[in-house]
Length: 130
View (tube, rainbow, N blue to C red):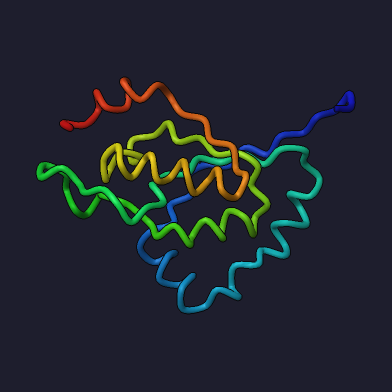
């Protein structure tokens, strides 16, 4: 590591709903050539993944469907296309489909070598009525 280590910090990436629908119908729109030209100057690309990547899990009955997110695991390709190195899962939506979806998300990220950070699961669980 050199004297100047550059980190690109990116905000919420929510891959559900319209993003997921667009990705499955037009995956070629997700090459991010212009964005990757900018991100290439960074040693680490880090963003907040705002939803689980899972097919498992289910929302708690008290969870409001309009603010409950989960995208198909194949949408991890969007993160790969951006050359994301790491994500944080410490947010208010990562448990929208429960701890099973969180565990599955970690498996999918690990499979594609994207490092995940998160707050202790006990703290996350305290935010949801599981």
